[in-house]
Length: 480
Image 1 (cartoon, one colour):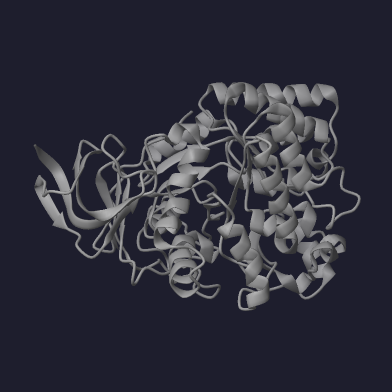
Image 2 (cartoon, helix red, strand yellow):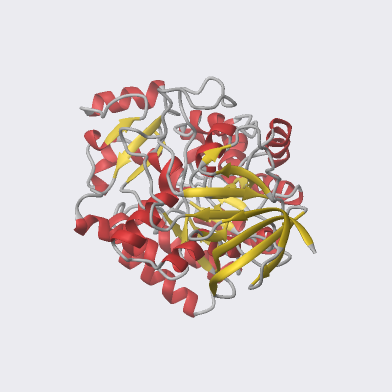
């Protein structure tokens, strides 16, 4: 058989079967047709000797869903970008917009509990827009407890979105810390009935807020046990911080009892969110050992006082803000991040954020003053540079597994991704294990990673010979 393309002589790593050997990979019609230990014939035969052929990376947690964000993530080895923590409501509108514009990477959305709650309790038209969500993130109306009628309306809205193909339910309960735990259980029960996961930004831990209605970690594992839902714990590193041992121990125990709780983490000490988030109120910062100076707008410097922070929260609540939770250069503090990433079956996910100062998101290269969190451009390169080569926290095959196969196991619709096997989607990342690395920093936030030599989506190159192909738009929607 003659294939459309053969990737020849590469070190193929397939996380599901454990294959780690030199093979030819034959691709035709956007599908892997053969993985062979004898040479294959192709209309194009590309020698990738000395490079690793891996499944394309799957980002479960990206808020950077436009063209600019997709392109940066492609240069970081990503082939599928999913907005699952915040989600979008209504999902049909989010899918339609992405499809009309075209995307280089595969894309998908959960439905958004926060957007539905804002609609019911604050009268906000969600418009399937992250910008609208962030602009209203600081409003007190949606952060308060709701009654049974409101819960029923929210659940009905989410149920309709699940029927429209949403990949589960995103629950930003950490941004509405007074929401009734019974409402959270009702949403989890809906997810269980639909056979789809929930993706939770946990509310405060009891160590951070002794007055919280329920400990954030306990809430997630209780919902898994009581409803049978698959509960995915988003960025466990940034919500647990120094309490990660206690949180992961709890997850480990409920897993042993049969509950399904999965986790994800990213390799940075600074988070990012809208400056209007409830937990960034100046009077609450001490709970995380923070001060106003720990927080800085992406578009400007760090805050020097409570009053400066309050003014920003009042006048621009949706503006992206760095939250410096841990010192990455302090080995004792970075150890908390290592534990979250090394935890059994933890997925690597970015929590990528939209770029600012990109008036035309279709333009490439990016404007010189474009900016984001460095994790948008560099999460996967950083994992291979830091956690594989420099610190040996993960082996190369294990890092690949956590970037591809592990996230594919979280979302039922990804059963043809995260593997290098005949019959799987031809989403492939070809990397140089000796040079792959992040280049993005807090000073140069959108510097693309290096060492990702080729990235293919549905059998078409998006990155070739280390360069982005701006006109390549092979991304397809991923729906439940």
